[in-house]
Image (cartoon, rainbow, N blue to C red; front, side, top):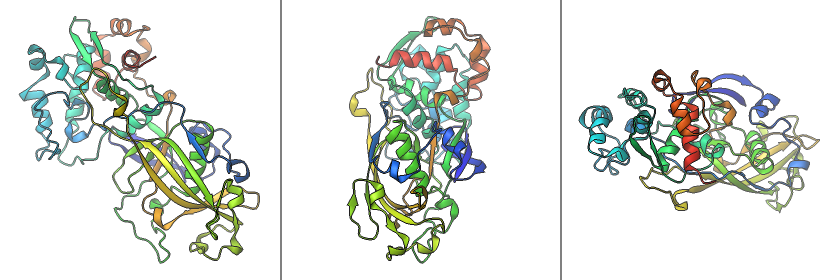
Length: 425
C-alpha cells in the first residue's frame, strides 16, 4: 500500500494522511521511478545492486539529549554512556542554557566544545541562540529514548556527499568557529528532517503483533509493507537506478530509519527449494504448490509463486566525534536477511506476495524516499546571495536565521555552503 506521509518535527515519526493503490504509478513517480518494472521476466535477472553515492553514518541526535543542542565535544557533559537517559528531562536545558551557557564556553576559549546548534547560531550571528533553544524547548517528560532525527540523516546520507574534514571559519564578528565533520553532518541531517515525503507501507505500533494459525500477522498495519512493494522498489531503485532510499528497520512503534546501501538476492522454487539464477525460472504454479501455508490469502489473479531470499546492507548510526577528520572506519553498515514469496499473474507481473514466517515480524515497517528537490527552503533563502560561505554570511539579514531557527529550520544556503567546505572533491 502506498501512502503520502508527513514527517513530524525531527522525531523519526510519520503520520499517514492519504492513500493510493499499491501499483499506483504516482507512488513510484515520487520515488523517481516513472517507468518501474513489475514483470518478473524483465526484473528476474537483477539479483544485486548498490547505490552510486557514497553513504555515511551519523548520530540520530536523540531528542532527550537535546538533539543538535547536545554538546558531544564537551568533556564532562552530563550524558553517561552507562545511563544515557537522565532521570530529569530538564537536565539538558539546565546545563546548556543555565549552568554552562555558550557565552561562558566562548569566554573560556572553548568554542570547539559547543553543540552543532550553538555553532550554527554563532556562525549566523544569532545572539538569542534560537536554534539551540528550539531543540531544548521540545524536550518534555514524555520524550522517548528513540526519538530523534534518524529520518533526516537517512535522506541526507544518500543525497549528499559525506562531510569528512573540519571547517574553520570566522563569523562576521570575527569569531573563529571550528565545525567538526560531525557538526556538519548534524546540520545536513537537520536540513533533511521534518517535511513531507512519500512512502510504501505503514507503521506497526505493536511490539509483538498477533498472528493467525498459519503464522501470518493479523493486523493490516503490521503487514502492509508488502513483499511486492519491497521487492519492486528495491530492485528498481537500487538494482537498476542505483539510487538509495530509507527503510524503517524497527518492527514496532519505535522508528529507526536506515539508508539502504546494497542488496543481493536468491530466487528459489518455494515447492522444491531449488535455487535459480533468474526469478522467472524459479516460479511454481499455484496448483503445484502443495506446501503453500498462505494459500487462502492468495490473490485470485495470481497463477505462479516465486520464493526470494534477500540480503540487505544498510548504513548504521555512529556517535559524533570531535575530530578534525573522520576516518573511513567511522562509516558502519549492517546486514539484514528477509525471506518472502512473490505472486505472479499469467503474464509474469508481480501482483502480491507473503512474508515468510521468519520475516513476519522482522521485515521493514516503512520504506521512504526523498530527493534534494523536496527540501523545504525558508522564505528567506531566495533573498540570500553568494557562491561561498563568506558571501552567503554577508547577505544575511539579522532576522533571517532567528525566525527560521525558531521553527527548527536551518538556512539552506548556509548549510550547503558549509557542507561543501567539509566534503572531499
